[in-house]
Length: 128
Image (tube, rainbow, N blue to C red; front, top):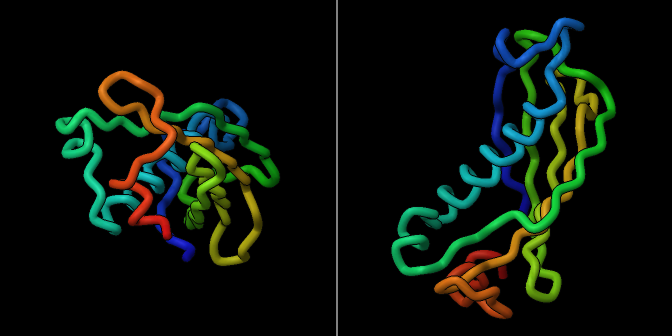
């Protein structure tokens, strides 16, 4: 399954060069992951109240083509389970030309009641 979230670059996200500042791509990917989980019925707040926290263990961003102010883009998100990690593969693609702007790989692990978990049935059921 690939989840898609359309967004638009806001002026304040750009640096002096007129392109999106590199840190904002991480914000885009995080927002898209949260929206994907909400669309699947997963609430971080509810999980946290039950002592379950999904946290980023590692993130890799590869920049391809810069986005500029007012560019529209889509973040395409896929997830796979690899051992104890949930691996989110995300592409940020400029619209309408479908030019790849950034590729991200995000490793998420779960911490349950303060301990690194080897299994998280609450999340596993959403990513089968």
